[in-house]
Length: 81
Image 1: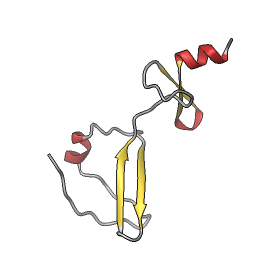
Image 2: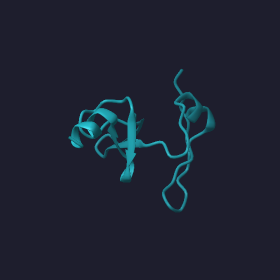
Image 3: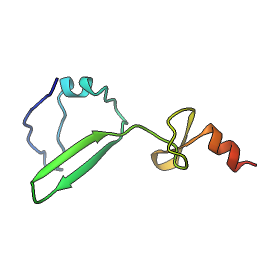
Image 4: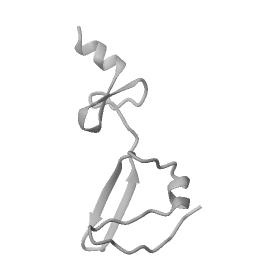
């Protein structure tokens, strides 16, 4: 199901995403969204990002690092050798 909605920017440039849209993407507080801006088309696209290992791009057995980056257990083990 596709959701279309209009929202106003607040004084800080923020937009509130409707609860139905957040639920459809299983968005939670702290989730990372990538932002793609196309000035020529006057579009802004938000995409939910799936955490992945900084080294191998794997998505399993992840351990958090500072700045919302991740390393998987296998890469951590390889670095410790």
